[in-house]
Figure 1 (cartoon, one colour):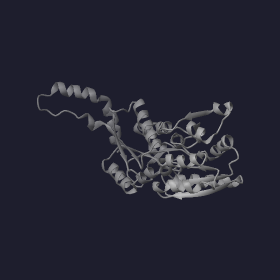
Figure 2 (cartoon, one colour):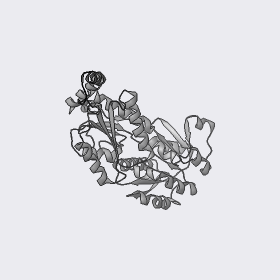
Figure 3 (cartoon, one colour):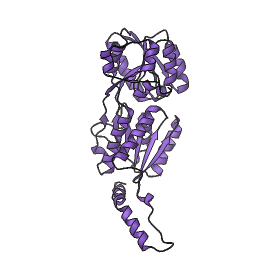
Figure 4 (cartoon, one colour):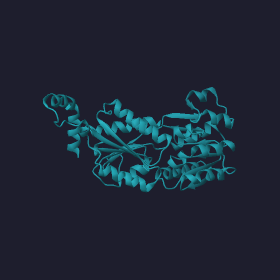
Length: 336
């Protein structure tokens, strides 16, 4: 496959001149080269649709285009499993059968499913919270299993420190997450360790699917001072429901992504999803230009922005000082 891939990249640079030459020499009815035959084919796979994954996908594609891998050179094959694990496995098999040159797998479930195919198609995973724990690779610095990519390890300490700053006095946190996602389980475990070490308390509410999220959030009301949501695609997709429950109860929700805040959570410390998509695309380009996957270390992309939902802040009656506002990016509900 690597030889074929290099051949495609090289042929793309001379394709136009060849076509002109063939056009000049051929008569009526002669066969001409099809530009699509020499295009690279890049698959993009995700488990479910939500704002964060959309921004990651857009950031990935935009960076490819910015670095010279636009529609003239690359066919993007995008597939969404719509939250169905069986469908996800079918999509990954389709990627293998269609012999794409590379697959970008957004978040943990898609990365796990694609790596489990054990094909010779390289996988660039995007925003996998714990790649080693998820079994996607064995070692970050020396990736194996024909996969590498980016990790958005959640800055637990910084998020709870932000809570201490913006909403001081929180003693009991609700932890709301789905047990089927290893990344969210890992983050929840880290959160519990942090809270226990500091003498704080927590109440866990776990779900298995999106239909259980609203009821789980409601069950936390009256028992917690604030809610923390790990990097969990199931909860993230239902964040407007969580936000509505929390706002009515005057409970701040601290999320793990900027998109959660866009959807109504109060605040977070996070990297932008567009940026992590772009960084992942740069890694894909390294492979497309000849570097072996094993020689492209997986990256933990650090969080770099404090994001606060202004609508939620107003509903909760929270007032910030001018000094606090200096380092904050304010957003409003995406529905507004």
